[in-house]
Amino acid sequence: MAWATRGRSSQVFGRSIWRGPRERRAIALTFDDGPSESTPQLLDILSEYRVPATFFQCGANADRLPEVSREVAARGHEIGNHSYSHPYLFLRTPGGIEDELRRAQETLSQHTNTTPAWFRAPFGTRWFGLGKAQRRMNLTGVMWTAIGYDWSLKPEEVADRLLKTVDNGAILCLHDGRELNTKPDIRATVEAVRRVVPVLLERRYEFRTISRLICPMT
Image (cartoon, rainbow, N blue to C red; front, side):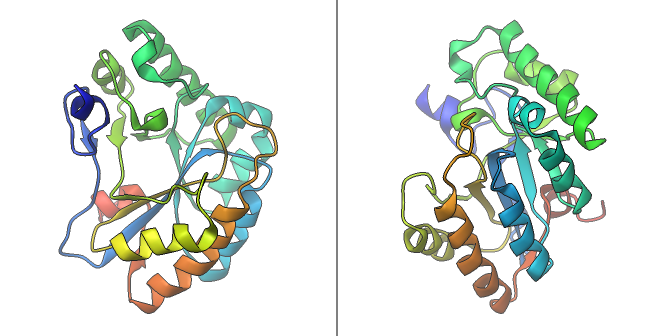
C-alpha cells in the first residue's frame, strides 16, 4: 500500500507520470506549494535565463496572493493544480478529494485565466477516489524524478541532489511555498535554483514545462 500511495511510478490511484521521454535532452523544473511572497524572486531568476517552469499552486495561496498567481502565468510559466488547502489526501473521502481538486481548479482558472491540465498530490500521497476526480477534471497526476528537499536542506545540498540525479526527461521538484504558511522562508530554494539552472544549461539541457516535456508538440 505504501508504494501504491507514494510510489512515483504508481498508477493505482489514477493516471500519473514521473518523468518524460529519455531520448530528448529535455527536463522540467517544477515548484509546489506556491504562490508565496517570495515567488517573484524565482520568477526573476527564471526570466534571467529564459527558463520556463511548471508551478503547482495551492488554491488557498492563490486566493491569498492572486496578483502573484497571475504573474506566474503572465511570465509564460505553466500552472498546475496542487489542491486547495494542501491536505494529506489519504485522510479524505473520495468526495472530499474531488472538492479539493475542484476548488483549486476553479480558483486557479479564475486568477490565472488558464485551466490546469496537471495535478500533483500534496506530499506526493494519493488515495481512493483521486483517479475519478482527475478524470472528471481532465487532470493527469505528476510525481517527480528528483526532489530537492529544499524545505530542510542547505542550498548547496539541494543543488547537489538535483545535479547528481538529473538525466534526460527528468522532472525536478522544488517548492516556492511551504504548505499554506504566510511569508515562508524559501531562501534555500531561491539559492539552489540560482546554482542549478546555469549548470544544467551548460550541460545542454533544455528546460520545458510539463506539457511540452510530455507532449512536445503542444
